[in-house]
Image (cartoon, rainbow, N blue to C red; front, side, top):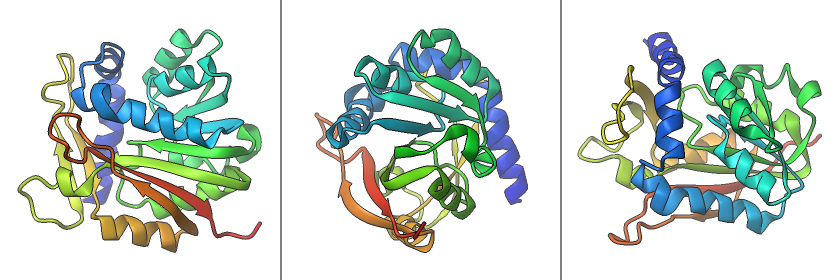
Length: 229
């Protein structure tokens, strides 16, 4: 059932917080080390935002990196232990708040508005329309949404190319992971339809490549709001 998947997804980010923090900070994940971390950072810097909301910020690496470059950032995540890790490492590098995606609308007044919203491997649930609609409420006029996700054509592996739940075991990320993580796979067509249905217009799309295989590792999408405010 959908509820079971969502509960297990939330549980995994509570139980695996320390292991995930270590994997990120020790750069154990090859795709991040070689491709995707730099891809999202370069895309953000090219947009020259003044204020960034990192949705699903995890242990805070992106907010810290933006702060080093003089960009104000706020990170939100539903996982209390991940936010604790982010705050402990922050120094002057970003502000962090425990906030699930469904709570974004209710916390809009406290969060304020942002000229760039970033979802970096953070849109993992099946019912994403409420989240994408809630993001409109914290978007400054003329602001944009930047999404990085697994490239659908590479993430499909040998499984049928259709929407559906998959499971991440964290194999190869180092020890300490206690719970597998269910995540919802979407085809490229499904991603584009979802954005269109929730008031977002695609501005550009990039496909960062692995430097050795020259195969796409992730999908980067920049979107603007179609919603009149």
